[in-house]
Image (cartoon, rainbow, N blue to C red):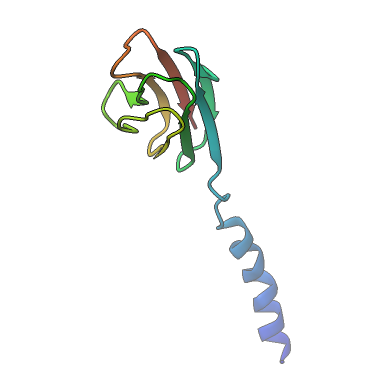
Length: 106
């Protein structure tokens, strides 16, 4: 390898490191006692949130703006959503609107 190729590699290598994004994470929200836990969750854009229903009643995790919806989750079922944009994402259970939560994405 000649000196120019070596020096060029030294200049380009750090750019490859800074150009990578962090791996998307998975977060869990339990549905139990007609409540979401945690009620407020901080995530990054692109992260996955898994809702798991531990109640005997069916529930959903439905964004107020319609950007995500787990669909009906019966006891023991889970549904996952991917957070596609930054900002606050309030959500509720479509069957029990008093059940509310918030996902904050950065």
